[in-house]
Image 1 (cartoon, rainbow, N blue to C red):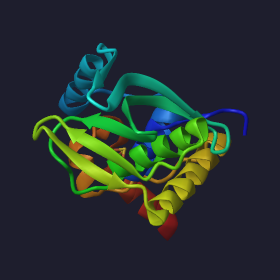
Image 2: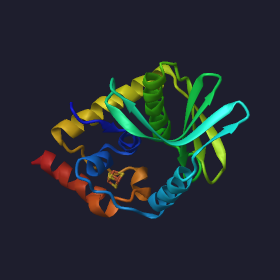
Image 3: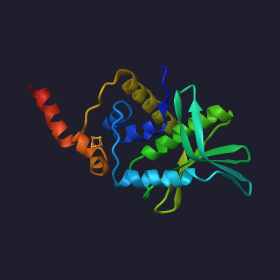
Image 4: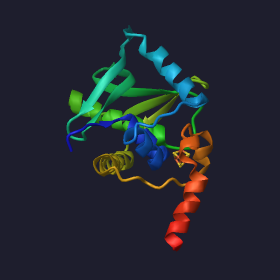
Amino acid sequence: MDDYIPIAALNQYAYCPHRCWRMFCMGGFVDNQYTVEGTSLHDRVHTIGENQREETWQVRAVWLKSERYRLIGKADLVEETGGCWIPIEYKRGNRGEFDNDALQVCAQALCLEEMTGKPVTLGYVYYAHSHQRQPVEISPELRQTAIATIAAIAEILNTGKMPPAIYTPRCKGCSLYQQCLPKAADKVGRYREAV
Ligand code: SF4
């Protein structure tokens, strides 16, 4: 595959493969309250440069890339302390019940490892509403899930094949609901299978 996979696509795929297809194959992104708040948060984070806090060097809006996994994207914040590198992703709201944010941090860690030549074992998701950093252990299991997700996204990008729209609790907060109409799509899919 020639093209790089946007790191953010892992988050979207884990949220919903159909949403990932709409955004990265169809270019069909639509904002809602949650996405606008998220964009605004990232804009604020990305306006600040770099600074030193005691032993820790912090740099914001860092481009990350992996040739091995064909990944590219921007980390909100990267910290380095004593030669250890840590990616930190900023999110609106509080910690959700889904693990899609951890997957995004893991993809950033894979890039950082390749770029620095050092193992990255920890990352964080910073949740703006609760002002809390949630640690993300870059475990073998999370790495495996991230690598499998990268392969699944590559398949979508290469083939353009549309994953089905399946109605789940996540649909309620999804900005693409009106474009996708998952309940109707679900019914049509089941009708097609029956005939
Ligand atoms: S409305 Fe539901 S099925 Fe459709 S893209 Fe959003 S999360 Fe996926």
